[in-house]
Image (cartoon, rainbow, N blue to C red):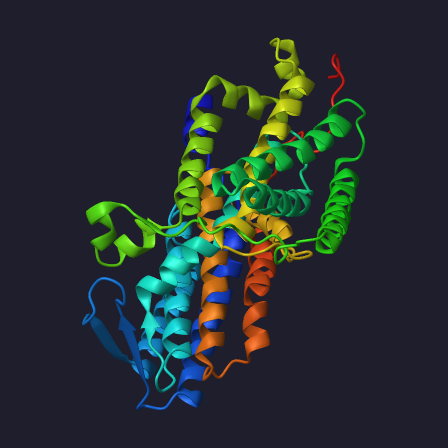
Length: 430
């Protein structure tokens, strides 16, 4: 009898997932309807959108009628929303969301570049999006390593600044841009070492320490910048030397249409960033070090009982994470052949924290989130330079930050940080 009762017991239903699906379905359906209505109201039937490959195949271009394209994409978005409302199978929610988001992005691109004389230069824009995603990749990877270890790293912005300043200074003094990279990494590691010491040995509030380190880095780099300007023979704010990095093509791979310019004809920072994502992922989820790192971030007492020196591991993990964020700071100067200026990171270290959360503390998720923000930044820059966009330039510059707020607000309730993140540990605690 008990067996029969157990056999006929209803399956467990995750009510939160059902509610989330319903809310998402309503939102996507509403976006689809509003997108179609806006297209009918503001788009003329004669508008066209031109897509072209501008780096490998000079004559390859495609022209689409803008109004039917936007309406078709709006129908796809609304259909995904209706599918969610009708109750799609478990596991298909992410697929439906991905299809809806892709349709929204394609519709907005088609609309925004439909002005006369505008063309969507696919290869240049996508290559620029990958390049502009780099600070988010390096900063978020640093945050992932720290927070997987149980230490909150709010100081990514300061590590960026120290890396940018030290990198260009060392590169100028030595005349070697690669020496500048090493200097930037060392500066980032020393900055995070201070965070690691204060958070593990003295157990100071990690958020407060991170904020203080950001202010310290801003003040230090600004002071040193002003002092260097006063020195005799000052050379244009210590610009990058003449052997600055250019694009590096990987042979015939760079000639592959679309994929070649985007992935295989890039700055060395791009290759390092993409490799770093997969290296960190492999180390975190496929090695003994990764298992221990995740254990001290989730349940340090259990790790301690197995012989793991929790605070020592946290200290060195946070210090090593500074190498990554320091290298990311060099992006702002060395990768762009720019001189250092005060506060040139412009808050992107905090956006990197948002990317880390969007990526759910997973390097592969970080890569996806960083590419979203990089694409938003590139589109803002491209439409602003084009000049005849219907959207004002200052508003376009806000776009990456608006995307940050929208994405984090939509996912923050579902993203779960490591259980011991930000919690100090004393050996013997339970």
